[in-house]
Length: 326
Image (cartoon, rainbow, N blue to C red; front, side, top):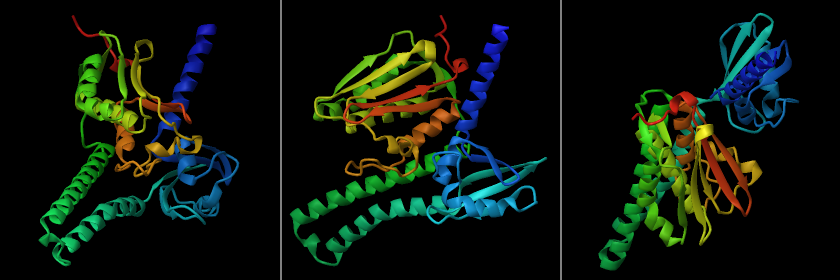
């Protein structure tokens, strides 16, 4: 009997995990009574509990009055951004599928691209129209700034394209054996100068026999991005530690930085969200990391405490983690 109960509990845990990891928000109603909603729905609707539907409640209730299956409508709220909702009717249940509208995604991308483009235009105008380019020293300084802005723009466009392609499922995964300790050491070598500039100690606590089966390019992107963030958001004379937990099929990147406030923990995985705007970045890095982990069927968790540091823990399914063949 105990094994049957354990099996039932495991199934419930798996269902709950899948329910909360769905990329779209799902809200279930019986008539107009809210029964349940997943984590993504709470995030999109800007609510923290099941008690009400926040600024989108009136728009959602209006949608529920429709009796047409697969009916699509744009939700609007007193505050917040427009959302796309699709109503599915199953017996006496009404299931609403919620996602960000195309206009919202396009607007976010345009807003972020506009900043480096505006900086480039200002620099070019200063050089070309106002005669600053006639002074060799000023010209050299401005050209250096232009180069930096163009590099930022190229990086942002590449990140947007890669994120869109991955979320659309147009980039297939190529699974292979990965000696994880070697991958971590290679990432340390790549980022060592950046760490030295801030006196950050890089520590690898991964056993030689810890092996992943995953897409090498994608997991390399994950580990390098997490280590680079841990360096950038660390304190002087801090530490970055990479650990692996073979029994849990997971690994963590830990830093001794300033930490992340509770209200910002979920925001760090959203597109174009930068918790610390004083540090340059596109705001897409962790969004791409989460998409890669999702594509592998895994999950990424953030544990953080202000003034003590943060831990990003990546867990992959057991079937994707095997011993290196002899």
